[in-house]
Amino acid sequence: RLVETAQQEARQRIVLCDLNWVRLVQFRIALAQFFDHPCTHHHLDELTSVAIEHAPGFRSTALLFVGWLAAQLSWKKIAGSRDSLGFEKQDGDETRAINVSVSERPGAPLGSVTARSESAEFRVEQKPDADLLEVSFGRSGGRHMEQVLPASKGDDLSLLQEELMRGGP
Image (cartoon, rainbow, N blue to C red; front, top):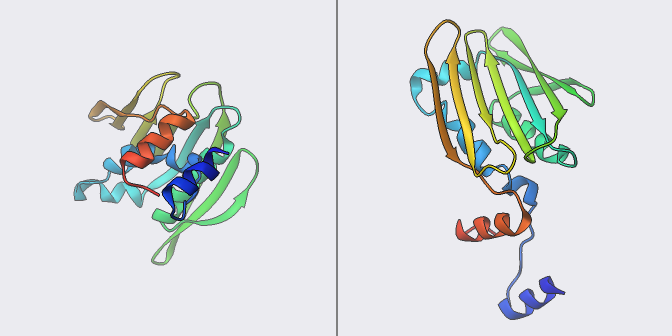
């Protein structure tokens, strides 16, 4: 009823979007910011594993994140089960395997994403009921950095408001 009323009042085509995709905006920005500077780009080619934790009922949110990451990094899916997805990345004559684990735990819809290479770990985590993401980067035997970034509240109304304020569909 509300959609029909909104469509009549707007007198234009309404575009429906997947709120699980909208729910990922802040997580995608938080993970991508690690690789903004050219000196960190090599880590993208060295990722060996990604671990994603999601709340019960939000598996599709986690899988959307995996799909986005695989598309951005040109990974090809080679294997998969409920809890683990195998990808490979072709680097010239060399093929590198990447394992992605997806697990359920109570908390935020997307609780955490941890990407690892041989020499570094990149982590984005949202604690239950928190409006900030805890973001950390650490090198094996080297420096460690932590910061907080904005998070989506996660409820449908807040997600719709955020999407409309961004000028999204």
